[in-house]
Image 1: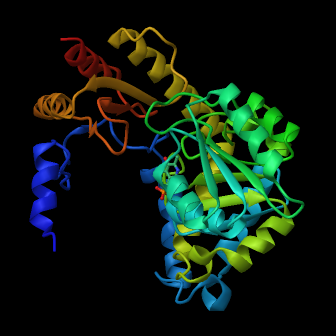
Image 2: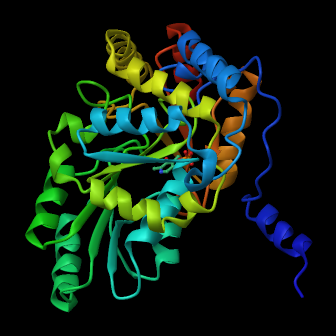
Length: 371
Ligand SMILES: *Cc1c(COP(=O)(O)O)cnc(C)c1O
């Protein structure tokens, strides 16, 4: 039998062993996904506290038993309204949303087609669903079309074809060719799911993501996202038509067989969505994009930013770790991302800029990167 030490040694030798980071208090955080600074916003804190006082800290049961409280329903109604869909369903995390949705929608005989850079939760959900998995190179429309064509040829009246992409990619910060992908899914009579984990709060007129910005809301069958990134709280959601949501409620095992998230989590998430859509949200988004343009210029990156995620590709895992450690000595928290989170030999610093960063800290990071 192989011992854990053997595997750990192999990871260590490849510079791929992970450890929980040391206490990072006092460092300037360029690694969080709290793009608007909402995790510590007074209005979210108050909403969380009030709900905890009213409902207690736990939901006490799964959603279909007695765990559904008013904040869960209100949050789902709010998300459906904000996303312009008939309904929405909330999960404890984005990860469990991906797993629950993909396994509920797909089974043997169906085909799921994913962008190569899709998040681990989407890949895991696709694998667990037992559908046939096809992958197209990142944003490669011709390859996507040929996969769709061949899936459509084999499809029966009963089977489903689902195309899955992120709107803003989590490790590269770039944007999916959403309009084109949408058109292709329509052409081949297939379904489309978009994970807006890194676009919610950041893109779109009211911060509802890239689908809002591109006016594609009504062409997407499944709008997925997390409330743990720009929304600053925790939880995942899926917004869709009422029948799909009813089906998920009946078949998504990560929804059914798990204790409902604390009502306070749902209450704080509601406050976050409200804030994102408000004038204050607009101001925070403006500030975020100002900061991003400032950092881009200070660090000499040629391309205009498309999201708060700025990948600084280093290549080898050990080089990325060394650079991250050096920045840490300067009081700057920038995490090194390695395989399997990103492809081999593309180890990087994943720098995230947020609305609350100060110019002098961004300038300091930029000058360390350049030297
Ligand atoms: C973070 C992330 C998730 C998972 O969301 P959690 O709420 O953190 O579990 C799913 N998809 C993408 C693209 C993500 O970046």
